[in-house]
Length: 149
Image 1 (cartoon, rainbow, N blue to C red):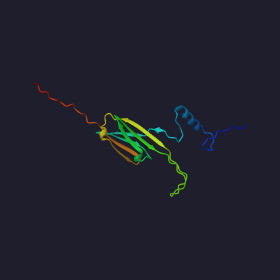
Image 2 (image 1 turned 180 degrees about the horizontal axis):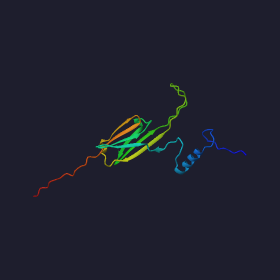
Image 3 (image 1 turned 180 degrees about the vertical axis):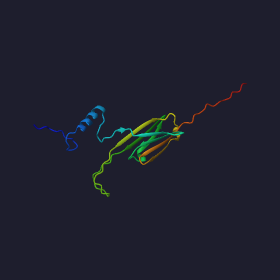
Image 4 (image 1 turned 45 degrees about the vertical axis):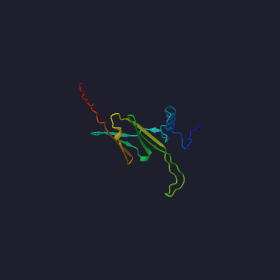
């Protein structure tokens, strides 16, 4: 007896258990498991302790410095990187017939309550965002002499 084999709507491939897992993840978590669709995700970071603070290194390959936003609100440092979709199917001067890029959004927040937020410096090189975070200098309470009259 013959069976009907489900086909993917986007291609002429046969049924795959991975597409079933993707559909299950889509229903349960409201986001794809194996799909190329990208929602806001976390990126890898390394935090290195230094003598006077910390160095935060964030892996953001494929993002230019214009795609990255670093902000401080209160005691929260937020790093957000976002890139738009770029799909073309026409021949250009470099000989490309088809190019495919996807949209990606990555975001992480960090508690910087012990960091001097006014003196954070940032640099982006070879897909690595490096933030230098200096610790707050402890302020000793001022001793005030009161004269007795």
